[in-house]
Image (tube, rainbow, N blue to C red; front, side, top):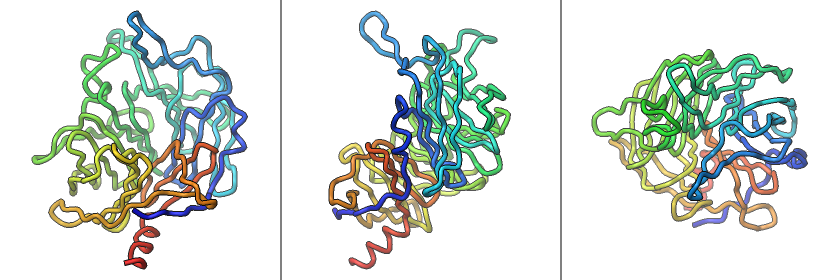
Length: 321
């Protein structure tokens, strides 16, 4: 296992005065998006017996600050006022901003929560769409498709959903919230029980990694093109480039990066393991990590961001071998 010394490539430290970071993601344009709650969070409710559940709608409306950073430049900084949903996910959608609550209640055929919230750059709500309960991740494409992956409650049902929207584990939507794809595993692959990580590399190429057997599945033009059984279990994000994959964390080592070569016939070769350190030689405390295309985008607990490209680690591995 090697130490990987990194320098920050972007920063969200200036937004630290906000109440809490509630959403962090990367757009198809390489922009880092972050959503901060400007009022105290009201995100969970406890039922008799002590069980705690995520709230969809807080007691009072929230004010959110949405920031977009490209390198050292802040290209977006808007306030969303009077949002009635708790927000957990963010992506650009054309010129607009798509916010989403990860949860949605179903109360009847004509009574359910539209948890996708489309805002203009002026902070005005433009549209509400249904994206389903139990969203794990959300990534959009340059041409306006929305990909959502789901954790187990969104797949098997909760919050009143007996026929859950996200039962396939992975869905593509058009820009107005109409389904245009649902994952259907081919022979030899299990269904998705919990989609741990998603990487929308382009409009044509999407990758997912899921429980229980943790295959890495490549979709090309919404068809399964190839799959590999990954020896890293419980990773939370991955990057892809040129026949190699970089996975962030596992059940056993949360902050270790695993570089793998993707071979024919679903075989995988371990290329190296890396532990990220900052410029002062301290192990990084990573709070968020997202895989987009060929890069892992990490954010530490101090608000400093780091981008790690697959090819950079591959070159480092080859130099040291």
